[in-house]
Length: 515
Image (cartoon, rainbow, N blue to C red; front, side):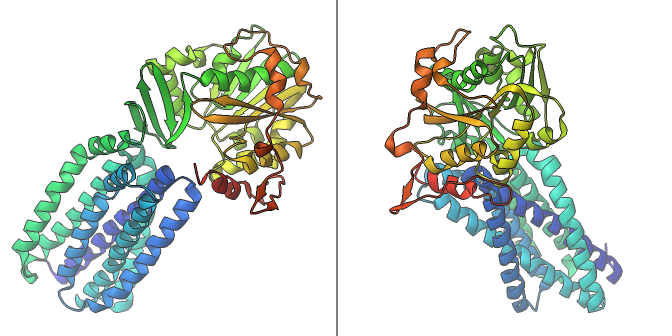
């Protein structure tokens, strides 16, 4: 089939749109990889997008040197994007598993820049080719750029709603690489009459296609073997949801849950954490009948709450529906949470905790904040004075709330910033910390509308760890974990964390950098 100039131009526009879709997918994919493996999603998305765009600028500049054999150059670039981008996620997991000392970050940023540079070469070549075909320069530029921008929107939507939740980050990269390769081979076929070295291009394309097909079929399993090196125990369940990566491990009866690589609990000692989280605020509150749990989709906090016969309702707000489904389906989790989320007293909502608190008009006797640590912007808002003020406003007059507040040993300034932030809402506060072998020393903050007297708190249910006599002792902190933090001989300023001044993120990052 011989194409006329108009048909060739349409092919160029379609090619530009499709490669733009692939480019934006790789861009956000690298941000997601950085967020999962390196933490601090906002930071990683910012760095990867910046590096990708910078790479595009460098690539566009280098494209000036391509003046002959435009389509041949385009095919070579697509081959490179297909291969490098396709293997990007798998190799990232490999580097993370086997290297150390920041090699994973260096690798991610390098590959982001390289793929960005290759992507930057694409459009200038296609614009020049459209111009060669007789399309006026202003029209060829406008049409190719339209295809590029429209493709960017489609790519973003595909990644968020199809690729990441359905295929995961490894398989998605290989699938997108296959699309880049398909574009290259299609252009090779349609323009074969004006290209040299067609057989060579075809041979290279077939070899890349074989490698990418292997990746689509077996890449996830290979990444799984890499990722097993990141965990102490054998993995028994792994999946990517729309919000996070869930991993369950088990060894000699010890089941552990990881979300985005961070340990959430170990079945051998989680009772220490959850008994402190639940029973102290339940003892502080006056006639606790209605309880709100923010986070806690594993069902362990709710298990402890259901020990109270006077309890009338538990409202659980967890953003990820898949986590709750897993807690209700996986027999390893069901053994630990005792099917607590299936209890008739429990109502589950899958919403952002901040938005839920803004919209609800309900009052609660106890509020439990069992949310992930504030290591990014989206989580930071759940550790602000504004958020804790919302919690205060939804407490009954005799109500109490308990906040998991990271480690006062490993993240001392972060812990006391959370304390100060809760106190800034006008609530009475008391600080507690316990030793959880799988975590280390961990802190909590109790807030109440009534004065808190730890020595007077009474336990009315059976526990495996917590006793009335020890509650007061949990409020004592050593010299190296109290609020008088020093850095380089200077006192660290402790002030409330707010939406306008979210300084807790930087403190948290500094605190945990050596752990």
